[in-house]
Image (tube, rainbow, N blue to C red; front, side, top):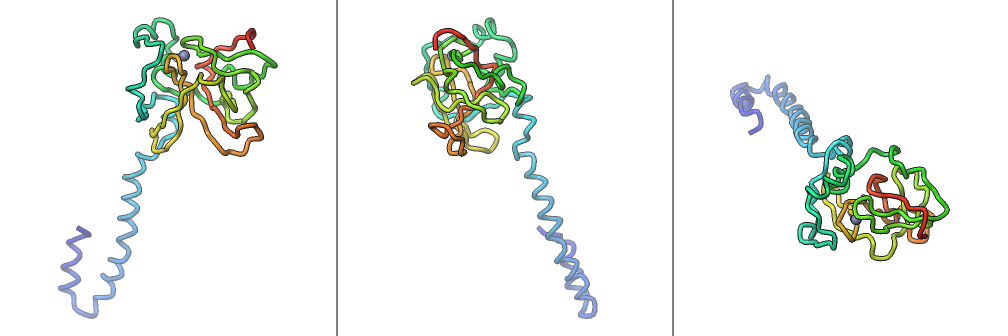
Length: 199
Ligand SMILES: [Zn+2]
């Protein structure tokens, strides 16, 4: 398959010319491999797609999971803003450093699910990660469910509201943050609604 047209000149040309086409042939593999890389490039995750579109997650058991709150997509659309719907119900991601709770550090209170209002995180779970999204080192026990997310060519752990299945974000481990768990629940602000009372 490699430049078949070049192999016949090699055979036809006699010894004095042999070195020149042979050298040029050796140079061909570089453009070939370069072209291969270019063809593969579109499959590499494009950062912009994180924020501009909804991921179609290949989550384990996601379609089989049943949550106590079983509202239909139409019912969710009726109560959520378009951006909330995109993130919570279509697993979108808000742009970093833009969310309402990114720089929000109350001394007490609870962050509820913006969809179903289930309590998810306490103010005392929140820490400054610098990542651009609200970060929590732990959740209220049982409030958050984890799934494997293989979208964008990566293996990550998606976190959803255990009550309605609403997409919250992802959880990352072992990053070295000085917190009790060394876990970072990286949550979209728009998936949350803070309540001062009830800590
Ligand atoms: Zn919920």
